[in-house]
Every structure is written in C-alpha cells, then in structure tokens.
Length: 156
Image (cartoon, rainbow, N blue to C red; front, side):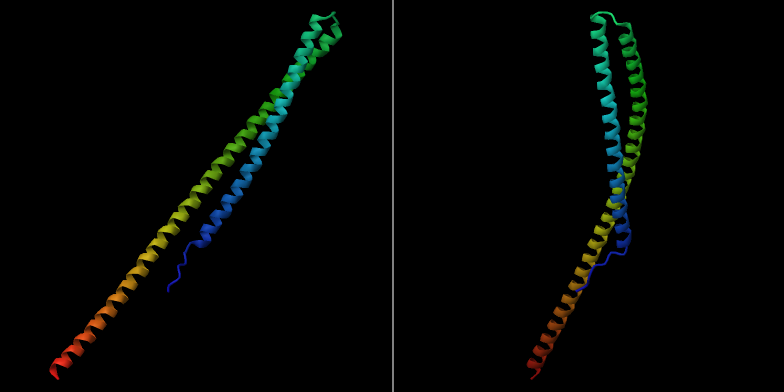
C-alpha cells in the first residue's frame, strides 16, 4: 500500500516552531505587562494611603511640616504613577505586537495544515482510483477467462 508523504512537511514544522516561539514571546510580554500593572497598582494604593494620611493631618492639630511632607509625598507618588503608567502603556503595546505576531503565526500554521489535509485527501482519492482500476481489471480478466472456458466447453 502507498504511504502518504506531505511534500511541505518541513515548512509545516517550521511554522509550528514559529508559532511556539510567538507564544513564548507573547507569554513573556504578558507577564511583563502584569508586572508593570502590579507596580502601578501598588503606587496607586500608596497614593491613597498618603491622601488618607493628609486628610487625617488636616483634621487633627495643624502640623505644617507634616502636611508639607505629605503634600510632597503625594506629588512625588503622582509623578511615579505617571511614569509607571507610561511603562504599562509601553508594555501593553509590546503585548499587542506579540499578539499580532502570534495570530499571524497561527494563521500560517493553519493554512499549511489545511494544505496538508487537502493533499492527503487527494492522495486518498488517487489510491482509491488505483484500487478501483485494479479491481476492474481483475474482474474483467476473470470474466474474460470464464467466457473463454464457456466457449471452450460449448465448442467441445
């Protein structure tokens, strides 16, 4: 029996490896984004704490030095949050680019898998056609031999 061998199997394997690499890059970029978001969220939580501390300072006896320090800390943390948000935005762009590359790699792999499927279906049709031809030839031969025997028997 004939064995199916896909001519572009090497290309398909390369596409699979490219997809795996794109998945790894995407996962790494997503992890970096999560890390940057966690840092930003921590800074925001610290800002909230400073604001609550400032509120308490304003409600208690006036200590101008502590209030000024608190105000500076809030301004400083706002700057850090802004800087961190830029990092988050940049990491999100990297994730989006990695997602696009992953999607492209997946589409290319699926295209080659579909081509392989189509090639296999064509191979099966050819094998079936060859088998049908063999069976037809065998039946014709058998029928012809039987007719010869019948004709020999009648002529005898």
